[in-house]
Image 1 (spheres, rainbow, N blue to C red):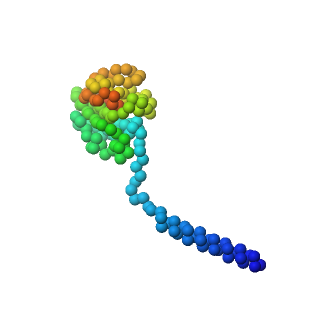
Image 2: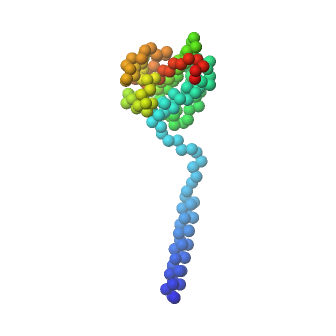
Image 3: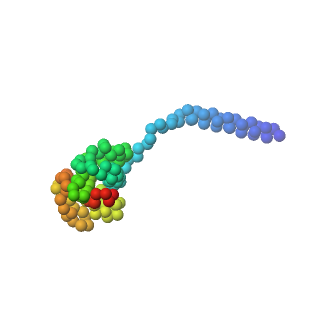
Length: 161
């Protein structure tokens, strides 16, 4: 019986120490009040940029000319991953052409095209023209882009988006 009381006393002491340890550790834990922004790969960022840009043009069908990236309300990981990004819209005779671009390595351009499942609207800028790995030269760009940047050119009928 003496062993049982001693064992019970030892267990209560250990429990008390455990509770005190947890209380001490709880004071060291801080709550994160700001959202955690994870890094986004360039290819995913460009595709997100392109999607937000298409939605922006659909919401502003009369827009023409340069669209400031700041006007797009991009999420922080997207805007942080985009380098030297831009967008330009032409709107003539019921045809809208939307061009977007960003600095990106050729490897990441291929990753972007692969992630977009071979989307032929994405390629590599060559100054005033652009190319895709599958179709070759695609033609003139509405506005010149630095050679080597990823570029997307989408043309559609006004009102069809």
